[in-house]
Length: 483
Image (cartoon, rainbow, N blue to C red; front, side, top):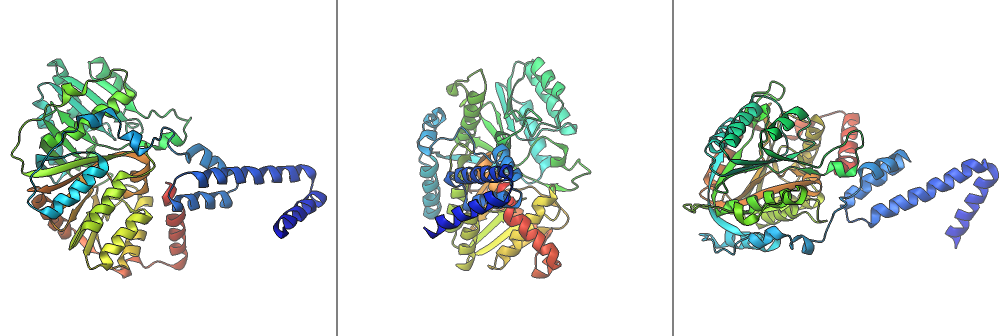
């Protein structure tokens, strides 16, 4: 009653002493703010994300609300996870009985397999530790294609890598090889439209994902397709962090030395990646493809096991986030994470802290050079935060590292397109591969190489004046959750 009396008295005072038009505007704004805030808090989002938007409403009234309505809306085609698992591509996952030598690893992967509804396959996996070598091997396999080529990637830029890819594809299409390309529209902005039209004219089928109609941009345009999947004849799959651009092979002056990786899969482990391409193609292309015609895996030596899982904004929960937390909390001795962007969610931070304080040795590698400086600031902030919990942070020496993988107990690992940030978990189509077996030796050797080109961070590396620290803390805590 007292609260209602106070509100009523305040409104009467405003009405008596303020211009009636101003009063009406004030009341209107109050109810607009109330409705938008109500909408925000009813949505299923991270708590920190809601707080960030609320701070924006308070800091820049009206403009903050407009920004939220234009760019802050959730993906409009969300479905329940139960509905998600009814998609046609799940029907083509095979029931498998992979051979594990370690019971603990089998339990971990089986648990994630049940969670994701994806199967674990025996496969052969080859690891390419630098972009130039990875692109070279990819192009070799493309040249040897006999039936079809399916390419899915986020970024494609004009340059020497694109010109060589185009040359190979034009030659293959003339040989009668069916070629399909799935490209994210935001990621292809640097590539002129006439290049796309030229490739289409030659007979290459191209579907553009998430077209951005500038300047008519909005929330939906923030949801991007970030996967990198290259399928040749249904027998070979290349996947990892590499897109089509000169920087990925160190031919770009702007980015300097760039570290990246790719893996090549042979065997049944290709299947889920093929299904991910086909499902997304069929969802946005007018020409539907029959799954059965493109699942042509060949026999392999079965040196490793692999489980591919995907993530997208189509559901409220992030399967990749769940998986990484699962992997971290299942580790018994060591955890090594490599990421270009260390801006983890609250849940991921808690998992890392629990692991470290439980006596597990946790190491994280971040870049010492940025492709996006505002993201590097966030990575350094979270590095300093995690160092308080005995996590060792290594920063490469003036080198940008675009690698995304984690190694656990030197026995099992994940690789893929996923970064350790909220955008990856809630705004993008991603895929990662969880694996063990012979391939783990490659990851162990790669970590040793990263240690040679990195420095262990100390608290003294973060000395800044109070004002700068305050600005960075404000930026990271308020803006990064909604970027």
